[in-house]
Amino acid sequence: MTDHEELYSRAKELKRFDDTKTGVKGLVDSGLNTIPPIFVHPPETLSDLKPDPKARPVSIPVINLAGFGSPPRRAEVVDKVTRAAREHGFFQIVNHGIPAAKLDRTIAAVKAFHEGPAEVKARLYRRDAGAGVTYMSNVDLYQSKAASWRDTLTVRLGPDPPVTGELPEVCREALVEWDGEVIRLGAVVMELLEEGLGLRAGRYRELTCLEGRIMVGHYYPRCPQPDLTVGLASHADPGVLTVLLQDHMGGLQVKTGGQWVDVKPVPGAIVINVGDLLQIMTNDQYKSVEHRVVANQSEEPRVSIGVFLNPGKREETYGPLPELISSNKPAAYQQFTFSEFMRRKTGVKGLIDSGITSIPRLFHHPTSTLSYIKPDSKVQNISPPVVDLSSFDSDRHTAIVEQLSRAAREVGLFHGILPAILDRGVDAVKAFREQPAETKARGSTAGIGATASRTDWRDSLSLRLAPKPDQHVTEKIPEICRDAMEELDREVLRLGEVVVGLLEEGLGLSEGWFK
Ligand SMILES: O=C(O)CCC(=O)C(=O)O
Ligand SMILES: [Fe+2]
Image (tube, rainbow, N blue to C red; front, side, top):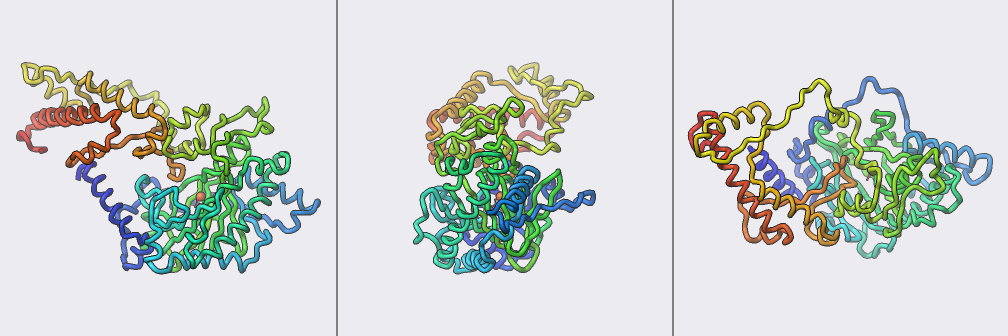
């Protein structure tokens, strides 16, 4: 299969899976023993899943909140919470005041939804970011390189409270109650975290940090090939703080000190982690760290419920708090609005336009990738050959075939030249990118992909032009670049035929062999 055919068949498989509206649980219920190829992760992800024999014993702190309200214990608790947020960005809390029975009830309610009637779930199955309640498998199904073994119920809880009637009946009461507990607990933790930085009490409240809440109820069914996929790919949470309730199954891992560490389930504990925005607001004092969930290999499904606490005022500007900036610690980030930060569809350009001077953590690549990018001093300066195709049907023909074959064998890269059309194509794509964010958001697939595992410094406008471009498709091309894109497509096809013909000749193949 060519790369293009492979992409095309993958897209069809994704759509087919999505259209079942029964998620990964539906696959498991159908009794399969191998996972579909769309779930197989690339080798670099899979090799990183294996336990590291050189790993040092590190554990994520479990902090006892008992007595945190009164002076002698308070300082101790503040110290522990602050230290954990600085070192690991993750900690668990016990004796937080929420009875164990309520934790169990919340988990059971989400489990009951996932294990409930397929029709109820199918009715909520939609990829509509604006909807209050949605059920789907893999929020980034069409953006990620590989799908993960997990289904999710998502509920928008704030700033506007959900229309409770939209919540599935089986978990309605439990989730509304859980939201109340998270608001109370989120405030306790934010107060401890701000006290540890010497901030004035209630600073987070002024910044509406707990008002924009999104709840995700994840369901990780048994995976028949847990070595080939993951439950949730490595990512950092974009918001301020995440309050996470996990059941007793385990599988959540955090990257700390360069190694993956299990967040072991502790009865009655709640997991707290720092999000990107809190790292930014604290000017890098608290860390938002990468975490992931391995695929569940047990018969019993794993259930977890995360609540992401985000600012309610999305148009307010956020950035390092002035109290945390000094000449020793200059601002590591500029101010930007939360919607600028979160609105996937404004893409990287949206971030640049908002005036950032350092790139948000979510764009940082691991050092293992970055070391490849450094120039290698031992390598000579080689650049892809430029082959001049003008008058290729004249006496230069043999020389051109020779040059192209050599370029394809040695470097695999070269280009023919169509200067005017190339320039028009490039200008058209630029014109598209410079349009107002709303225009682009309408049809664009560009994204900053905050939930994707890694993010690159690029936005893309993708147009599916083959195998059969038709009127319907071309009409969808944004008008501002439609003519130039169509012209470029025609030229690329023409050039492709010429180059392939010359390559066939260079290899001694019959004319039309590739076709
Ligand atoms: O399922 C879990 O334990 C982790 C969930 C998570 O990290 C998330 O939803 O962002
Ligand atoms: Fe997360």
